[in-house]
Image (cartoon, rainbow, N blue to C red; front, side, top):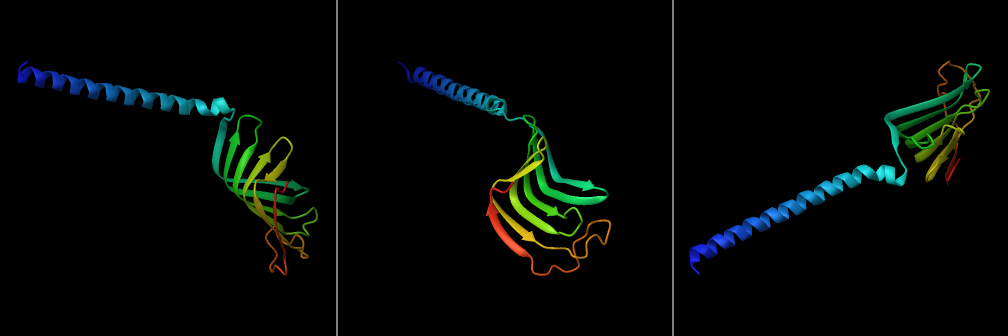
Length: 156
């Protein structure tokens, strides 16, 4: 065998190996992309919508009873429930005599039942608002005097 024939066979073998490795890489990349597209359907979770900034409140007879604010909300198709992140809940009471605040990182909101459930540690500040409704926007009392501060988990 001549050296020129060996060089040709070696070059063809090297080109064949490069093509084989490139083909395997592209095939694996294609499979991973398709697998990631199917993951939400396989585990039964489909995101319906996502929002930066979420607020919901309930009022009766012109008075706000509570207000829920979250920096991010993700609503799922199945069940309609939503994950809320960086949440602040303010409770005013039926006669606006309260200004209780609940803070936490992660909550689940179920619109069917109206329940909001904490998914971790929660801080609660209990504060009476003896002034009651002084402004139409339910602003905080002028002075927060000795609020009671609580830490808990799994709050509903």
